Every structure is written in structure tokens, then in C-alpha cells.
Length: 488
Image (cartoon, rainbow, N blue to C red; front, side):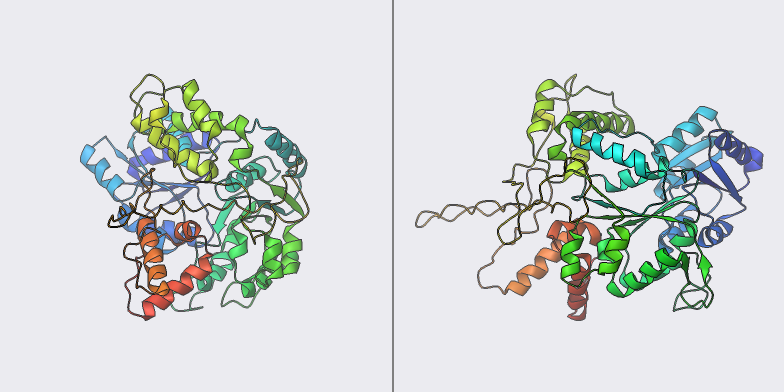
């Protein structure tokens, strides 16, 4: 783990750094937040920043977001002033640590915030077979393509591959290709020189250089624009990059791991993904099974999440009751592990008994089918070895709820609730459809979903079942029409 310490704190913060070093962290010290931003911009990567509360933490976090640098921040200060701690948390810090530092507290906070783990819950036969393959390929520098439905743990598997590789002491850098606008993704990957474009006020080191000596994860690589795919292909073949606005080449030593929840073969056929890049990434392909095919792991994962959320919320840890366990096993888990995690968070908060009872675990009761719908092609059968040369299984579609029976004459049907049983807003529940244009209904559905996701384009696109590129085009069209669009 890489720790960045920002500030002085009369020598106490250096003691915190020594504790972190003894715990195996790599530590870099910056005098103030301005120096810290400059260091991060120029490739001094960090997994966590400990910042003196006397520093402008709110402005620092805002600058991190502006620069799209994903580093959790822990505030620390001498003494335990409650008001200071509260302000730091409100400004965006994940935790507040009083100084002089306590070794156990520093270790606990580091572990809690970074959530580092070299183990995986993988008792299902399909996962055991997959891990055997990972054990063989992890020590190499082979490019890995991880495929699977959304929420199956592709990033967790990527981190596991890194932690079991010979690059484990190097950085693990992840970038979500779907979450970054197309015109900025090139700069994120390759970096840029000062003045390369409007807003490039200083040189910025890209993810390739930041990952030098380690592993670079390209999450949702299928969303990368075809023009950028050509530059990316050259970078991984030649092992060198050119910063945007730069003239010289920079050598990089990185291992590439890419993930996709789409069938890349179909994308190649449609001309959306370069065939040569597909084969370059597909050196080793791992297919993560959906949670419904890992029934042996469901209860263990649920208990793990229950314990985690109990600790996070300051409540007693509870065992999952046998009836609840059976309920969890029988549920199809359309959202996979991510849905299970959210479900157990609710379960911990709602439980009123000594064990987590079935009533506390609220599941969405929708007509879910695991097959591929008509016209989409047959679903690929799961590979018992967990690895294949070509296309991954397509995510199972959601069967729409059955239409209500025709109301008797003179009787008005009840209006559909805009919320599902799990409390999530249903973007399809649009009132007064008759007489409206399809384009208007589509616009309301997209904007309602985006509003529900607090402006997060990636989450909204997944809920709507469209690509992030399609969503961006729709939003640009609405903006041109004078419609107010929720901020990112």
C-alpha cells in the first residue's frame, strides 16, 4: 500500500508514517496539499492520504475530484477535538485519526479504508477451477481479459491477480473507461503536457506511467472509443506511450488486465471494437460465473458483508439464520455480488432479532429469467474450466413485469408505483403515457434514472441497459434542446 502524508503536526505525523512503514506501507511526505496535488499529478501515486486538519482538506478533496485522482483521505490532528473531526468528515475525509498516533488505530484505519485483502471467498467448484488457472498465470506478465456480468467481482479478481503476481509490490492502478468522457480518456491514460489543451495548466502523468512496475486495470474496456483503441494497442505492443501534447516517447513497464461485461466478439462484428486489440487482450480470458451459479458462496459472502456493515454502523455482528440463508440461496441475484452487498447492508440495519431473520432481508420480487431473450442469441454454456478463447456469457436480461389485467368497465386501474419493493426508483414508471411521443417518454426515463443515480452516468447507463456512449449522446441532445441535465 502507498501512503501519502500531508502536513507537519509537530513531528507526530512522521511517527504515523513510521507506523505505516512497519505495517508494510510505502510512504511519501508532502509539506502541504498544493505539493501533494503536484506529486499526484506527476506520478507519485497513493492509495491513501493522511492530511493534517490544518490543511484545506475540503479544497484538497475538490482538487482531487477535479483532477480525477481517486485517493481516499484521512484527516488527522493533535488531540480529539470533536468539532474539528466533524468538519473534516463533512469536507469529505473518510476518517479522523487523533494524534499522537496509536499503532493499532493506524493499522485498523489503513485496513478499513483501503480494504486490502489477499483472500477471496471462492468455495464454488467453478471458482475453485478459476483460481487454479489464476495461480498458474498470475506470476507471468500475460495480458488478462476478465469477462462476466456486472457485479460479479471482476475488479476484485483483477486485484487478486496483482496481489499474487511478481508485481505485487508495485502499484495497482485502475481506470474505468466508461466513467470518463471520451475526450479526456486519452489524457487519463497517457498523461498530458502543460498547455496541451484548454485547462491543461500543468503536466499530468497518466495511468500508464503511474502503473509503471505494476498492474494497470482497464475496467469496461469495451467502452473505449475506436480511435483511442488504436493508440492503446500501440502502447501495450511497443511498451511506450506519448503524452498528449508531447513529442517524445516514454517507456512503460506495466501488466494489462482488462474487464468487460459485454461480448467483445459481438462488438468486433459490429465494428465497435478493434479485432487486433481484442486478440491482443485475449491472451488469457477468464469468465467469472454469475452469483446464481455460485450457490456455495452466497451465504459466506452474505455473512462477510453482514459483519462488515455491522462494524461500519457500530452495531453487534449477527449470524445469518438458516431460513435467511435458504432465502438467499434461492434468489436469482440479477445484480450479482453488488446486489447481495446492498441487500445485506439493509438486512443489518433492519434486523431486530438475535440472528438476521428472513423478514430483514428484502429482495426485489421481479420476474427474472436467466436465459437470453429471443433475438439475442443463445447463451453460451458455462465453461467448467472457467476459461475460454472466445465470447463470454451475456448478462441475463430482466423480464419486464407482466402487464396488469384489463380493468373492468368503469374501473380505473391503479397507478403503478415509481418504486420497486427494494425502494429503488423504477425509471419505467412514467405516468400519462397515452398521447405522448416516444422520444418524450424516453427522455423522462433517462433523466429520472440519471437523477436517481445522482448524476452518475455509468450507473444510469447500466440501469437503462444502454452504453455510456449512447447515454452521453442522448444527454448532449437534450442539453442542446435546453433541458437541464443533472451534474456529474
